[in-house]
Length: 210
Image (cartoon, rainbow, N blue to C red; front, side):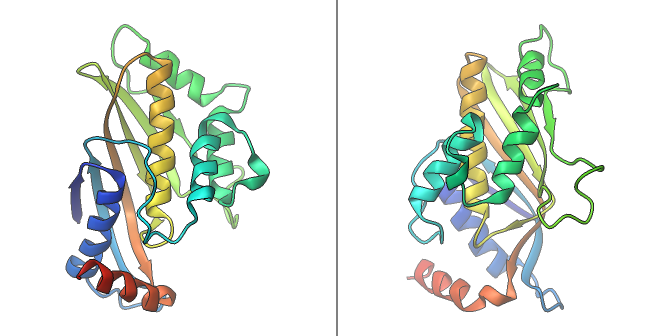
């Protein structure tokens, strides 16, 4: 398993990318160049502009980072999974985000301060089904800690976007419960690089090694 501790999402993305290539093993299949269980801890999570080597336009990331907690500008959200995450978290009845915030405001910590993304009645055999499974939160030492558990993430094309959008959601939740942002933890059963992206991945690797 790969373990990463970083100050920011950009640092975490670069460190994870390098660790997959340097510490990960060949997969023995034609789909993935690397595929490792990965645990990422970000000690000072902030929504910042993405590293310029990340292959998504900053304008698209800006839309995603705001949409994830407002639902605004959905037609311009380029990532279909983000739309799914927003609706699973915020839609009524039984809004999961409101239930999470209610539990965070409870007198004692409770394990139910979470959002579950998977719906067995909808998601089985769907092309767009949630890779992110659970968003869990707790106030620790006066700050909001958030854990995101995903079954998979493409470390080249998606991982940094995922971390930034959920850090944006963390900030929204922290503001709702009137505490500062604390640690951000991102756990991935499969943090991978695709064989089809091998040439682009090598370009970034060469750039990082300069």
